[in-house]
Image (cartoon, rainbow, N blue to C red):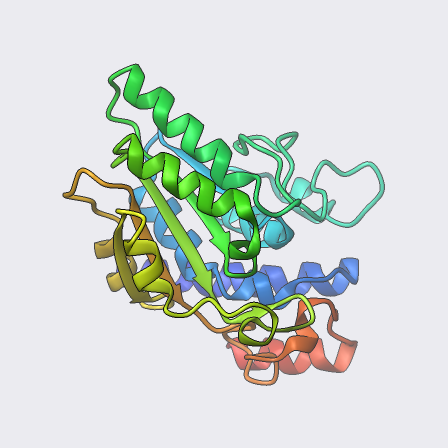
Length: 255
């Protein structure tokens, strides 16, 4: 299964690269940093009645390519990305089948996930709620309000995954608003916190278990642009699409 998952991860990155080039769209670096996280969630963890929210909605293409790899999205739908009248918008849209909540304005996904987790608790279900947020999104006040609310209500059915790639929009996170000591801060909100390698599929899978009565927060250390060395850890690739030569070069890197 691990070999199959590794192949799926490669396919997801390849499709992200090709579709970004075809659409000349942004956020390829943000998409590449979360591929392993999405792959483990969709191929190893999510059950039919569980909920997943991609709060960092600008990485929509990574989610669309994961849904395609999981056979939850048709090829003709994926091929429509970036074209007129496509439902596959550049930010996550609930108009796409198997996507429950539209995101893009940062700070909205986590509050929704917290409300959904509380509802599952009230209904006494065993359903889990997973939400993937960006590190830049931690600048939003709603993030910290949601953590307070989640811990107060003991939402141990809630898994908050932070894509900690250390770059946001136009600069490194540390130069915009310092987050460290991040693990210590989140622990002070009475959450169950774990810091992991966000590209190690075995470690990711183990982290998506919560034996406490607190919300689980996973700080996933990732690399923006992961998989293509000339894109890795570069601010430029938050917005820039690849040229034809860069596409050819990047495809070789992914092989």
